[in-house]
Image (cartoon, rainbow, N blue to C red; front, side, top):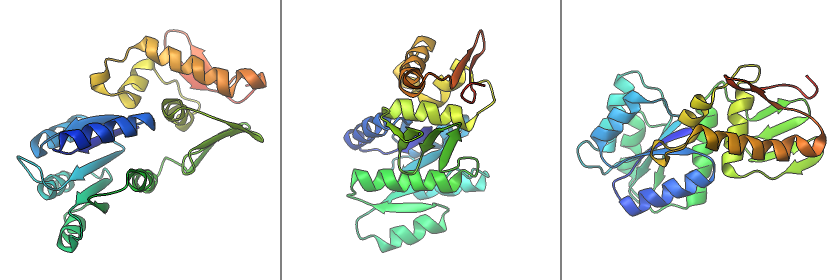
Length: 225
């Protein structure tokens, strides 16, 4: 899933980007309000993490403009510590949730996951195909009674494919939705991750879940289908 992170404190922004990337999110960064509006208009995001104090346009104005333009992307706004007025204004301008600074990274991550679940009617908490189950709330994967450990990127890749079960998903689509634009990722990197995922979810069980459609991409099939 692609996230837009809008934060002008560059060290904090890079730390959050690295952490969220480790969880499998593709993160685009904006350091001011005007760039945030431009990115939000150019790309589709699962959620936006938006600081209030920004150069150019502050977070309130960014949020208000997005809502006026009909953009319903879930927004988690970062507010000042003990800033009750900030929290009220954040919600009044259209934010879906707020988190006071300084915050725990674990809390931000759980709030973000909850926000994405609430904001995406097409993203069920548990994704299944055959006896393979991916629990997005608990961030767990299992086939039958056997737990499977996935990296953050493998989890995000499998979730994306399962959400589009029965559809052909191209490598370009996977790159666009699961990798940062600045990372310089290629189709070969997608192939490497798909192969690693197959070795975990399919090979040990003698089944096929992710099938290659030559010249097109991948699609999810039921075991034995």
